[in-house]
Image (cartoon, rainbow, N blue to C red):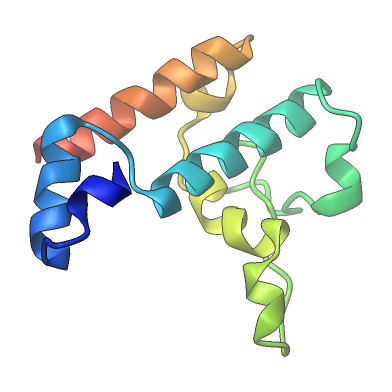
Length: 120
């Protein structure tokens, strides 16, 4: 696909990719990150959720009960690691989004959110 769009400007590439309904690389990575965190949260991953994340101790959180604390980060390169990349997006989810039972249901939730965002 990228080979077909070599002689086209960046804006034209984005419009063609948007027209085809293909997710850009960064959006695919964000999607995969949220799926990985969901698998950890549900215990479907070898890596335990508590090894990477500390849940928020506040009981009056908006959104959902599995909010992740965002640690202070002094290193610029640390923000590119999975725990730092995904915290804000995970914390923006609603309770009903993380209460789904299966990974496929969570994928459906993410896809609906993506489609709503593209439509607006």
